[in-house]
Image 1 (tube, rainbow, N blue to C red):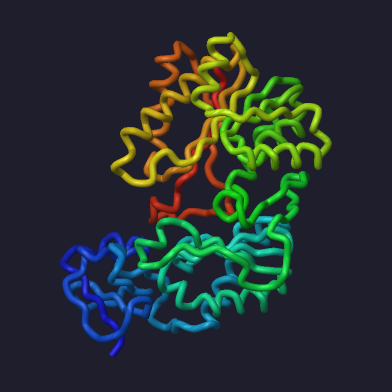
Image 2 (cartoon, rainbow, N blue to C red):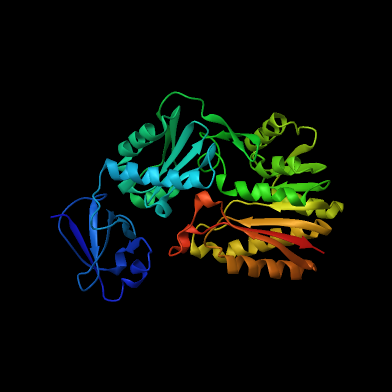
Length: 390
């Protein structure tokens, strides 16, 4: 008999509201036999069916629900879910580059699929999906006939599922440095060595939105990575862009992307620790019309939030002090542990301590191909604020 998982009393409310995770400490008993990564049916304390999903006793998240009673695990289900996810992206107008599958949001828990022109990059983060990777690759080849598929399953979170990190090509022969078209610009996505799966696709709409704030201005792009914001700022008519990052490889890609789009004369790169650079600019009296702060996640667990809060506050104070009166601070956080209320609280404190008055011009989040589940706070992670600083 397959696994049957029964919850403790009153532990079903979150699940009935649509949250897809069943934690091990919510379970009263497990019946049946099987192995990690197999399908388990989940019931409330009274024996009423709640859903089915993949089980893993090695994880605190015991079961990840994504099937109803009538659905059966198999390659056709995986293919159907990927096809549904792609239909949603097409409805939104995505074609050249986008996130095709966003894990729980697309009812494929632990699977990320990103499309970079005619090459796909997959990230497999759970044991259930790892055991069905062949089905995933087959579905992608049948649905899209890609030039190739690269796997970037090198995230540390795999270890919580009992999996080792892995990266490398899994289908086709291709160059992992792929030229994509985003917001009318050509950009390099490095699937092998780039951040995440090769490029930060979740900020693409925000990079386009930046353009209205930069015309004829001097822009400082901090933690610039491969220059997504920098190149969009130049495309928006910025007079000059300073792109700062600690990574030489990333800055080389900034220069390539700038040249590829005809902006080499307006984008200069600076290799530096951004915190130190901002303090140096402050001492030198340098100011900018627009300062962009898009740092990596400062906290990857709830325990790190206090330290991260201090880091975000520090860098935003520095950023605000470098903005010319009437200019803009563009600031973001990609950690879901730094919630929007907490992030906004930090910005208010930073403005007060910087002695600045800030007007909120825009509040944005991740692009809609990274759509979040309303019932799952974990899928909402990106905060993006545009503040006019006076």
